[in-house]
Amino acid sequence: MKIGTEDVDYLGKMCTIKLENTEKIEIIKELNEIINFVEDIKYISVNDREAINPYYIENNFRDDKVEPSMNIEYALKNASSTNGDYFLVPKIIK
Image 1 (tube, rainbow, N blue to C red):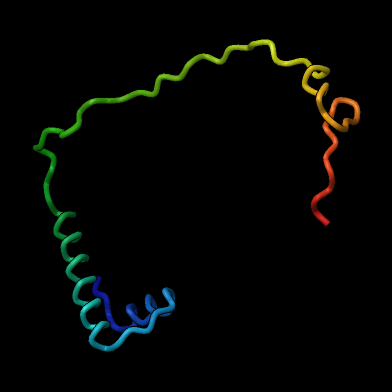
Image 2: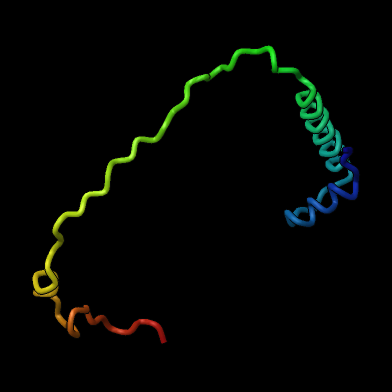
């Protein structure tokens, strides 16, 4: 895959930047170098290499514990306005 002028023009449009022709040429050159580097990496054989980080890390989650919670009366006792088991708050969205 090669990057061309049309690709850089499209990127410039998407980024809402105006690029001069000299900048476009430099960007095309740099992007093509990056693509060539990635292409080279794809062909490196790693089958005979030992893993750098061979350790398997597993998440240790704690067990869920059901614990008593605050009762409704206690939670609502300092509320300025309630409706049954709910807090009443002023409407803020029109």
